View 1 (tube, rainbow, N blue to C red):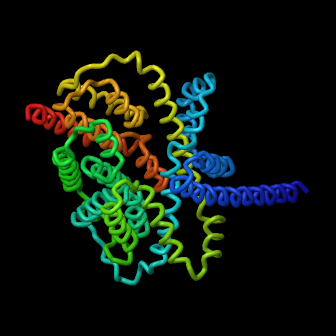
View 2: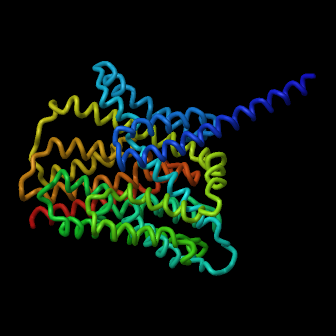
Length: 441
């Protein structure tokens, strides 16, 4: 009787879990569609998308891994002061922002996942895809993530990372490569948010000059990573991406479309373009069985994003909370003149803050708000912002890219941070050398 009762209880629990999973899948689909409408037509709907993503996390709470759950709880705990203050003063605008911080990134993740299904149906054993291994595999993979990522943003990590994972075991070395190569694109790419943010705070900065110095840092990152890879005893066993057009049809076409559209419509946001193009790819590839494909994704694929959605939502809440606190107390910060010495101190402090979970966005916003610049130092300010953000992205355990890599490929983001410490120190040294040359010029 006891065994029968236990079995019946397990069956009931499994049915309830399956029902919650289906409800969460529908919420994620609705959140994706609402978010697309919000950034295309009606901005006020963004909060609805955030609430739907939050609802999906609640339904999928039991599917969140223990490690991800630890990160989620820590970030929410750190966000409490900002949330409490916003509630206390009834700041409705800020309260509505708490669930909107990273919803575009979540929508990007889900939409790119949909578009990648056509790539995943390719027969990977047909011999057409040429494997890239050893040193050449490392260089090809690094360059691919770096340059494609400079155009299509975080989606490049998903395309290249999943390509590696399908071919064999995804290792910690792969995670480090993805983190470094993508973050390094932030030093120079005009299509990434880092450059847009830097130029918005430095309206008098010259992009070509900033990109030149940023390119030197990106090159430093690559050379250091290559040397580090080359001294490994098992470097010949390294498995890089599989090179074939069928494998990378999606990111290559997407990058081409985005470059063309940006040339004609420079004010369009790249992330929004990537989302829309990804959805169009999915609609085209699933045109013969669209309803069945949607149903399969809602019931099977979307619930697998439980970790990523929970982490990105929590990180967004934390960032909004910290930014709100900074804005409330910015009058207590005394402005100071931007000099090479001040820049050096800030870059070191920003890197240390990143290690304890403070997003680079928070650090650079505070710095850009209190520093006094002139026409002579606009370029310096832009370069410092780019450097702090790019280094922090590859180093910080709670940066968006490292959280995404860690949860998707089951690699600890703290392990990524540990392996990037020396890399970050080298970049800081080179950056400071450039700053003093930059200042004198």
